[in-house]
Length: 243
Ligand code: FES
Image 1 (cartoon, rainbow, N blue to C red):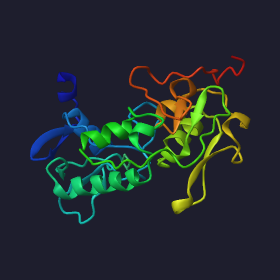
Image 2 (cartoon, rainbow, N blue to C red):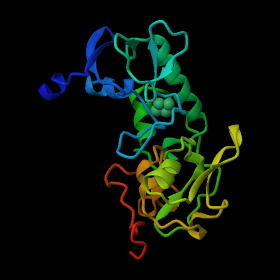
Image 3 (cartoon, helix red, strand yellow):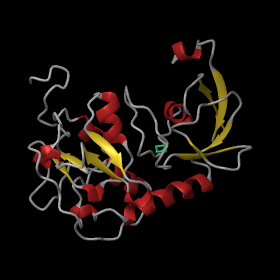
C-alpha cells in the first residue's frame, strides 16, 4: 500500500463520499475494488488479457455532472471525479434492471448448467427474486468430449469470444446475428464437437453463467454445479497443438 501511496501520478476521486486513490488509465471498477467495493459485473473479467467491452451494463455508476450513468468497467477515473456506486439508488436500480431482464431468459437455477455460477451468485448477492422457469428450452450441445454447451444460459456477454480470439488467439467462437437474435456460434455455426475447438478451456473459465461448462460437471438432465470443483477442462495446449 505504501508503494501505491508513493506513486507520483496518483490522484484522488470521491467514491460514495470517501476520498480514494486512483491512477491514470485506471477504471472506476478497479478503483472501487481497491477501495473494498466489488461492483457487479458480467461481461468483464478481471484477469490478464481480457479487455472490458461494456455491453452488459451490470456495473453502472453515477458520476456527478453527468446525466447518463456510466459503465464502471470502461470509464477511466479522472482527478476530482465524484462517483456514486453503492450510495446511488439510480445505479442500483439500473443494475437490478439488467439482472432482472437476464433472469427472465435463464433456465431456473435448479435446472441451470451451473447453479454456482458468477451470474447466480450475483442474483443472490443482489437479493433478486428468481421465478422457477423450469428446464431449458433448447437441447444442449453434447457433441464435444470436454465441454458442455447450453445456449439457453448464454447472456451473449461476449466473454467467451474474447477468451477464444483475444486471450488464446484461436478463432473458433464468434457472435452471430444482432439484437434479440444474437448468439454465439462455433466456426460456421457448427456443433462444438465438429468445430475447430482445441479444448483449451479458456471460454469455460470465462463464461459467467455456465452456458459453457466442463462436461464432467453436468448431469444427464443438463444440470451442473461448479461449487465443489473448479471448472477444469481436459485441455490441449493451443500453443503447441499436439497435446
Ligand atoms: Fe461493465 Fe458489463 S461489466 S458493462
